[in-house]
Length: 199
Image (cartoon, rainbow, N blue to C red; front, side, top):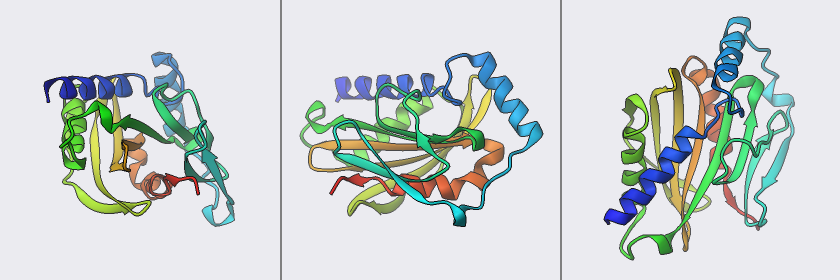
């Protein structure tokens, strides 16, 4: 399992370091933008008035359902197969896929979730990880957990859903700033739980 652990830790490190929390690689601009947004506050649209749209991956195999105020956002992480955001309200979701062929034949969803957490623990400061919650995504068993920590001196709240299909493991990751977590959590989680194979 040594190579598997190193591979997954590297993936998570790349994931955390390239999140570009506001969809931009310039740390100073990100920090200023976020700070300005928190000070000014945001006008959050009435969710009941929003329509829902489907965002699909480039291979037309997987999809997410998002409110109309969200959009496809391909600047979040080059490893993601799906990336969506509402930047104004600091809501982000992406999906990372890893083929099971890269892992031991006996590796399961619990093993994969553990490897993801191990990688996070090495890259996020002051990290707090909740206990796993067993849920179902797209008819498949999944693990749900929440993470809070600091990256580049920003306090970030993450939601992780770990799931699988016959040939792949998936990390469905949502995040926002800690002060906005309670306000944004339900909508982010709803977008994450819409993940499914294209019918």
